[in-house]
Length: 127
Image 1 (spheres, rainbow, N blue to C red):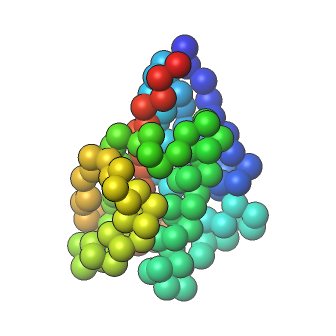
Image 2 (image 1 turned 60 degrees about the vertical axis):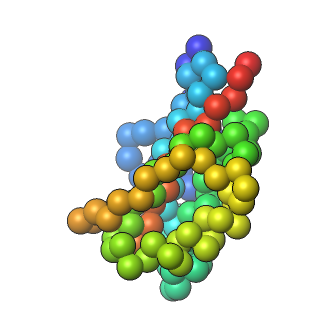
């Protein structure tokens, strides 16, 4: 079973991809950035604003699939600079808390639309 997941509470994809795809018991959420779903505009005046919106968008897609952060088994965090690591962790921990999934965090040469943070996730949702 393969199902495309879409949330009106998360930004529309900026390319030829889906917000998420459910395949059997797994949900694969595409990388989320700090796009305001209502306006399509970036919100990144501060790193806190950016990370919080990235996580809000990620949670909106999870919710559209009937999932929550507790169902996430793996995240990938992409940063424009590793100096952002500690501050991103602060907001990330507020969402995932004691149910923190496995993850990797990497610094990359560039991210879509010049953002500083992108986060993708894989969740386990047994049928």
